Image (cartoon, rainbow, N blue to C red; front, side):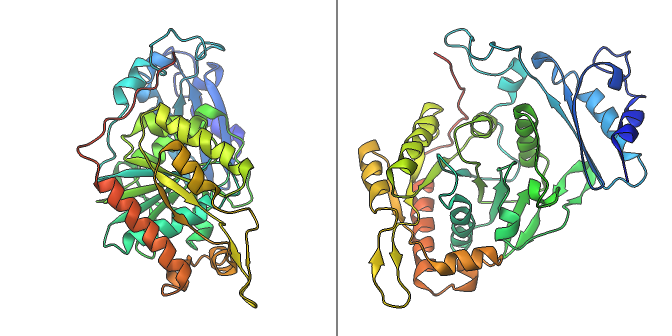
Length: 372
């Protein structure tokens, strides 16, 4: 079993940021995480020195790869600012270092479009919606991938019934796992399901960037990104890192969820990402025994909110036992009940979303996030 002491010993032969002091004694090690035989190391560097420190990162990675018994090693560079620098940035100046700004907006090799599936809060069924929409898009004849960007609570491995480790290819690219014709990448493939991810924001942002850039996606018509709930680091990282084709916002009908959905819409609009539309999940419940309809979480709130915000409304997905059961079993509804009424709803929403995405003229550059 690899220990933290083994990791520190392996890194002793790697000079730190000053080029002289051994990395473990340099004060630059921001974190070491051990998951089974997988090792994750975070190195803190100056914001403007990310590119210059890449050789150090590669030397650290090579040193860890030589450890006996290691399954996989990941080394990330984090560029944290002094407290208050982000909030106190000069008016009109973009968030992020010059090196980060120079990389912003680079497309992912082979991926034609990237769309974010987001929500203002957790528990609204966003991940289940993302997996079924991905399958709905694949049903249109598209080549589809899914990136599970929820580092703290990855759901896509369970939803697609996938487990195991991604194969490491030449050039340190990871091969995504595949189910039902969909390529899937998630931090959940690299850690045990019950293991908590105790990572700070910079480590999360770097891991998300690597899962975008260091994966052999091949040729995809669309990459569906299952975002974590909220409007934090992951959302801003994605908005800066790649030219998003758009964002779909998932909400339940009740006021508490809609308040957070408004924040999600406002955040994406603020960073110039087009809103493909709102989806009302758990819109209503039909009793399978008597056929009585119950609006458990109210009804129509997302539609009215979409009208108020002047964004498209894509459809209503009911609260259904079949959706929950099949999701838990790793067989999305479009696979387990492809001819059922609920599958038809997902397919219709996927078709409408694709029509709106392809209706955009020209490629959109990635936004530069500005503090006013």
